[in-house]
Structure formats: C-alpha cells, structure tokens
Image 1 (cartoon, rainbow, N blue to C red):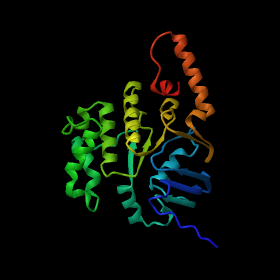
Image 2: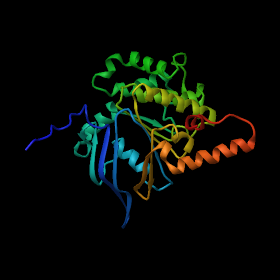
Image 3: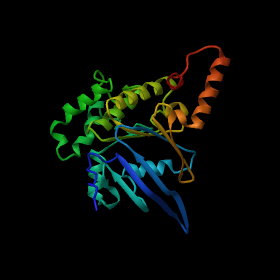
Image 4: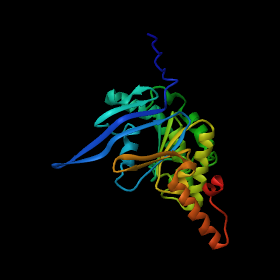
Length: 270
C-alpha cells in the first residue's frame, strides 16, 4: 500500500473547516448559529461572506478569527487544528496569524496613529523589539506616512479605517479578516478602502470580508452565502446568480439616470 505524505503546513489551505457547528444556550433554548459548515479558503484568496441578519456570518467570522470556539467540527488554520488549542495558544494565533478590521475602527482615541498601529506588537513575544519601525512601514503601506502622529479625531473616516488596516497588517498576518469595513463610510471613501484591499490581495494577502453590500462583494474572487447557519452557495463571483442579477439591475439604473460613472465593481464585471 502506498501512503500519501501528509500535507505540510506550507501546503495546507489558509482555512479549512469541516462539519462546523456553533450552538448558543439562551435560557432553556438552544440557538443553532452554525449547522455543519464546510469551507476551504486557499492562501492568497479574496473571499466575501454574505447573508441576511441571523444567517450566521458574524458567528462564522468570530470562529475563523479564534474569538469563539465551535461547539463541534474541525477547524484548521494553515494546517493547525484550532479546535484543540488552549487559551494561550489561541491568543498567540490571534496576535500573529490573524489581522482584524472592524466596521467601527476600534482605535484608541487619545493615541496617535503610530501608537495605535504599534499596539499589537507590544503583545508579541518578539515584535516589540522593532515595533515603531514596523508600525511606520505599515502606515506607509496604506498611504498614511504623513499622518502618523495624528489622533483619530484629527483623521477622516477613511483615514481612520486605513489606520485600522495598518494595525491589522503590522504583524504580517497570514489572514486578514474584515467585518463590514465600509459600513461606516460614504460610498467614495468605501471604494478607496476596497481599492486598498485589492492592492493587498495583489501583494499576496489572504482576505476574508463579511459584508452585506453587493458592490463590495463584487471585488472578491468568491462569494460564500449563508442562510440559517448553512452555506447556501459558494461560487466564483462572476458565476454567482444573485450578484449577476444585481449587476444587471445596477447597470439599468445607471443607464436610466443617464449620468455618472459605474462603480468599480460594475467596471470589473463588464
């Protein structure tokens, strides 16, 4: 019998979950947030997760980000079994392997952009040695080299989100998780942030984004749609029928308006 060699962590998918379940107890009731989810995300993929309120997308994001444990099932992050990790190991994974970007920025209001970006490295075993230098590089990478010493209240919404992205990138994580990153931004600023995500993806960054906006999801390679805790569809973005229908309706709306330019998502699909 020929035995296949086990995949090394370098060959393993970025994310691999099998039969994942998450159940919450609310009094005497049980809420089944995830009901046997199977999902694989390869390295350097850009994946959008969509679904209505209560579909389980936020729960899935929390599990992927090691912020919550699954009730059952397997989760491997870069080939490592997350469900078997202790609290200390999970904290290390969150700090080193995963970069988080939130809708509400979550910046320290009295700290400069540089100090906000430096913060994750202060909890790293070795990163603190060159923390300020690494934070400067991260801010320059997102186009804020001239705003390092500004506090959040001295920055626009888009600039604050760029600080949040720099903070997520400063530890060189293998995966970037973004939860509604354009939710608090106007459409123009939101497009700038998504353009930044596109650039990061082109540079090799694995990105998973939770969004309810079809134009944002249109920039991803794949759209995973959840419904009632289960994956309803998992398709390449150009093949997703819901997204294709949205593109057609958006194109008709723009044509009827008779003015304005299409969004980058529409241009990319055309």
